[in-house]
Length: 112
Image (cartoon, rainbow, N blue to C red):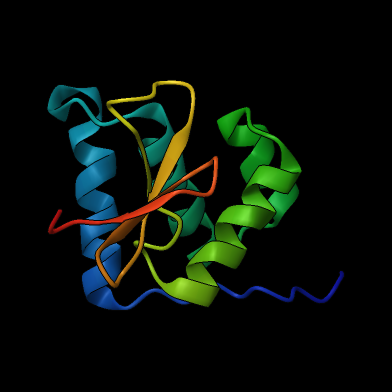
């Protein structure tokens, strides 16, 4: 068994929030991406190997690894990405300090 660098350990509150996402499923218009991320984190917390998680959810092994890494580095909201309404072709990263950065490198303040 290989040593994992990104060990997911959920608090009871984080687990409850993720279970709520999984239980609501499509009824709450939860995106497939968010639904899969919740499943990955729950299964990782249960000690399932990455290969089993990837196979069960029909996603790539590297996707599972990236989800683990983002969670460990930044918590459950890490890596939240939403589409930029003005430019559907680029992604907008919303940072903790309240600025939005698009894929072309331009950043704006949320207060603008």
